[in-house]
Length: 113
Image (cartoon, rainbow, N blue to C red; front, side, top):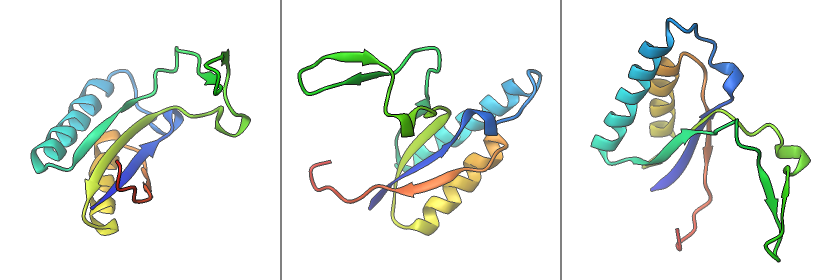
């Protein structure tokens, strides 16, 4: 089985304050469904109020990040699935719940993880 990252940037989810409770309820229902199906690994949204840190091999931490990843934000789910087709099916469920398209990426296999 392969782990898949299903994600979207914050700006893609364009819902009104009035719609947010129903969108959150729909998203939580998909999470519960994925957990019940045994495919949920983890997920959540990036806390954009917390500044990222870049930590070097000596443990020194400096505010900021790599320039090419400065815009990591939004919502992420990791599911362990039997196929890319299954990942697309789950991404569609998340897209319907969150009302925005989802990006799907496969993690490389690592026997240690």
